[in-house]
Image (cartoon, rainbow, N blue to C red; front, side):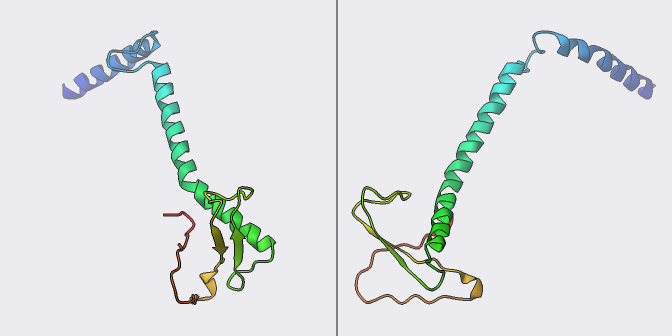
Length: 130
């Protein structure tokens, strides 16, 4: 008896559901198709903005790293200096700040950097600037 009741209920649902969804208006409690599409579009836009914000520094830094190599600044061998000016096109650079770029490649082992004594303001920038 229980199996017959289950089969009858399943058959009834299979018969009724297509007619419910074929209506112009979805059943009560369900959003309309355009609202669902708009919600997915909003979620996609939000995720794209998050990805842009997260990876923009990585892409900018990696591009600068590749450009240093193209200029002959080799990893673990050279340091590039940049005297900031309004003409420089650098991600978040100040116009009155000198910058030093020392590309490092740690695949060959640890690197020791010796700095002269005295006050030095600086930062080490990892690829994600985190």
